[in-house]
Length: 390
Image 1 (cartoon, one colour):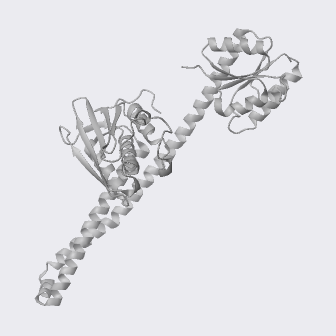
Image 2 (image 1 turned 90 degrees about the vertical axis):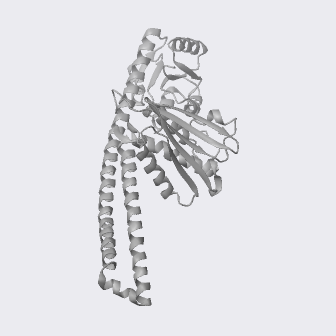
Image 3 (image 1 turned 120 degrees about the vertical axis):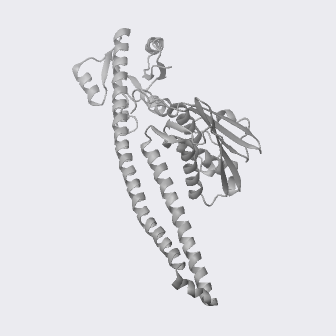
């Protein structure tokens, strides 16, 4: 693995040769630009971690190049070390004023150059890590707030649903009372009683359906938002996620069938239910979009199996399949054949990352043209929490 990407901006061939040799010996990935204009053009493709910038160059000198880089919101955080034979105090001060973090006098000494490069790369990495931690903490705080809101909304919705269920129960009791039963002695009264019974049954069924939807939404949403290590029943997480997918994708005639072959049917699992539901939702969305394009009807089977050490979940469709030449690239970031269908190329790479990193498992994919695709992943029955979880 490279120790870092360094862009050397220098117009002297002997200096370029010396710098490249010293840096590559230490494992750095080195790129060269022979003037400031070329350096600016290369930033996007190289994305360097540090820039070694000569001051005296034709076309655009080092001071101007540094000032342009620091004026860019995308590149301003890159540490820049000046390489200069101009060691007058005014020149050094000017270099710091335009944004350089350090300077190395020419001709340079290898040990001094490497020490300064290593120091500023370390500082840069620490700064980025600190910013990442701040963002992560902010995101966690936002997630906790959203989780509380979801739980609160679900609770409030459950209240009127409970009232509906109670009212439907009262309606059934009234319909069974002798007073109303007397209405059945006439044709009109009998028709009215049947309509009232149908209305009561309709209220009861839909209230129960809404209650289950609220509970599934609450569980899956809160799991995805907080995603804490939790002991759950595997079949429950899979069923809730499949139910939510079907409810939120009514325009698609995709039938999701769960095949439970777990030894104990429930599958007690210590893991991250939010991560698991995200994997399943991504795989179901992929099947909907690519296996059965254009809203075609289709079927997906989710099979649960396991042994004493691991669980296995497979998601199988019976649709278009994946061309053999594309199969090895499915988990690559940004690889997709369906940009016209809304694909970003990140879905399967995210699935791979979650399964292998967060769920501490393995994942595989098999596919045959016009016969369908099966994605299977294995993960331990008890996930071990990392020592330094953020």
